[in-house]
Length: 163
Image 1 (tube, rainbow, N blue to C red):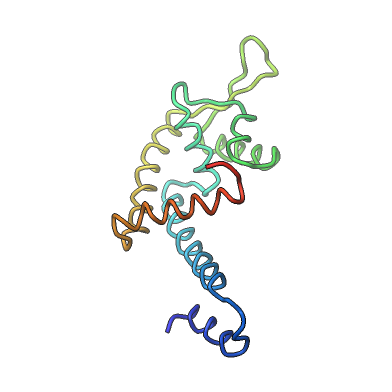
Image 2 (spheres, rainbow, N blue to C red):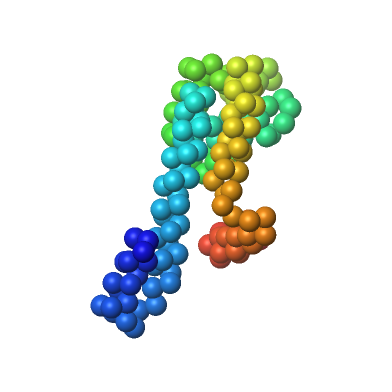
């Protein structure tokens, strides 16, 4: 018997009136998250990136040409504090993955862009990242993957609004 099933069975004996299905769901989600995070972090580490740094580079890359955004545009897409974003940008700049570019019209205006090294790194890293994601869901059938995705989308919309 799986650990989560044991916990649920024990609560079933001690408190038979409790509906422990949500407990089992949350237990499995939390355990899955640990496995997922470990695999994805290992992938990013191979490229010298933390998960947060990967997110910044990926956001810049998927923005398209010229692969730069203002720090406020990055902030709004990543739900970070400005201090945390500045820290990430400083680390990425010191590693040579990004550069800060001052506007020629307004020296106070800055954008963040991928360097050649940053572009090459995120292009390779995103390919590996998606391979890891596929590996992580390989146990699910081609029917189960979209079904699970839709269930999670519906559930998440209850917290974040919209669909």
